[in-house]
Every structure is written in structure tokens, then in C-alpha cells.
Image (tube, rainbow, N blue to C red; front, top):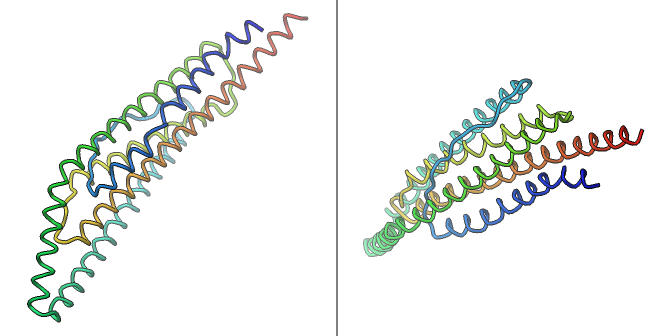
Length: 247
């Protein structure tokens, strides 16, 4: 039993560290985005490679390209919608009296100034989001490396080990790619010419932030799957060793 406890204490510690790593990102990140402003830094790094993971990495590349196409199409669609909305507003303004037009202009100008005054604070908060994301990636990367080292040192035979590693690498790359998109949107964020455009820009950022949060959850799940597989293999090996000692 002592040998069994010494074997699984490292895995238990890794699982606890993983649970602590992901706790606060979602709530604090969405709180920062509700003030109407956007910013983030990129994180980099890619997953580990090993024999038998080429197919998984090629699949990851295809998914990344598909994701980029989807983002491009969404951006073009949103731009077309904004253009159409602007044309409708211009047509509507022509039908209003000069007095009503002036009231609208003053209202939009007031909103634009307020938005610009809050942009600096918004981007500071988004910088904090970037820092938290990078810390989470660093923590989860360390966990993956420790699991791999444990498996190697114990000379374990783990079912689907290469496929599990490939999935971990693919999920991590998605997080990195989405975070890069979020950083670009933050850098290019503007209040626009009116309130509706500013709100659309904020919504675009919030959507990208939610995608990143979901990607981090998926990466965490892939790591958990790897830990479970290694733990199962370690239990099997320990049982076999005990049986041999009894015989």
C-alpha cells in the first residue's frame, strides 16, 4: 500500500493544480468586457509533438484554417450589416427636421466622447485578461510536461497515448489562435461614428472572448483525459507488480 500511495500522490497533486488554474478566468474576463471596451495580449507556444501525432496536427491545422475562414466571413457579414444600417440611418435623417437632426447629432457626439474617455480603462482591463490567460496556459503546459515525465519514468504503457497528446496539442493551439484574434480586435477597437457601431464593436469583442474561454475549457478537458489515462496505466502496472511479488 505504501508503494501504491507514493505512485499516485504526484498525479493527485497535478489534478488539484489543474482545477485551481481555471477558476477565475470566465467571471473576471466577462466583467471586464461589460464596460464597453477591448484589449488583450497574445500568448504563444504550441503543443508537444511525438511519433504518431502527425495526423492530429494536420487535423488541427485544418481546423485552424476553417476557423480563420469563419472569422473572415463573420467580419465581412458584420461590415455589410453596418454599412446597410448606416445607409438606413442616413435615409431616415433626411426625413427629419433640422431640429431633430441636431438633437441626434448632439446625442451621438456625447456618446462618442464618453466612449473614448472609457477606452483607456477598458484596454487596461483587457490587458489583465491577457495576463490571466497566459498564466493559465503556462500552468497547464507545466502539468502536461509533468504527466509526460511521469509516464516516461514509470515506463508505463498508456492506451491511445499518442492520440491523447495530439488532442492536447490541438486544443492548446486553438486557445493560442483565438487569443491572437482577441488581441487584434482589442488593438483595432474604436468607438465608431455612432452608438450602434460602438455597440457592435463591443459585441464582436465579447463574442471572441467567449470563444477563447470555451477553448481554454476544452484544453483543460484534454489534459484531464491524458491524466486519467496515465493514472489508469499506473494502477494496472502497480497491480501487476503486486501479483508478481506475491507469486
